Image (cartoon, rainbow, N blue to C red; front, side):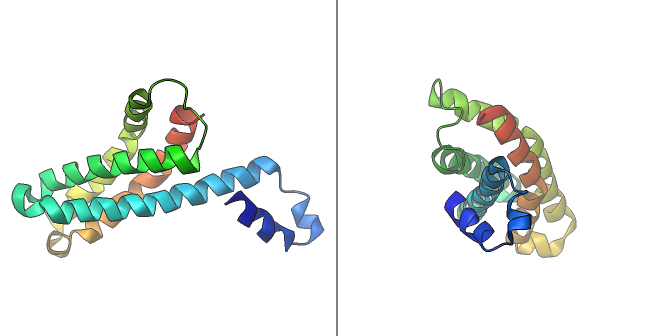
Length: 152
């Protein structure tokens, strides 16, 4: 991702390029990678929800799906977005830090999801809409806390 951003920066005039610090390129790469991992998490969340909702309902299904998705996104962020950062210690400790750091995002994510499936018949009928809204609501908090607390 950094190579792609560097290539794109190469197309900019020198007056713009000289103002871009290496740290900015890495941060932008992390944001883009985190967003791509978030899309994967959204797909996993949606697939898990649609798999379990008939058996456990939309509320428990949303919580189960979120747990599966947060585990998936932790792994992908560990091996790609923040590769080599914050990897000292045991993996399950890092997973716990990731889950705890994502609690504000969880509140935003599931709060949005639960609110929408409760008040919107459209979202109750097509829960992927509520899943997407929840993912968007929690993403910024998740990135900032993952970068500051888990993968530093």
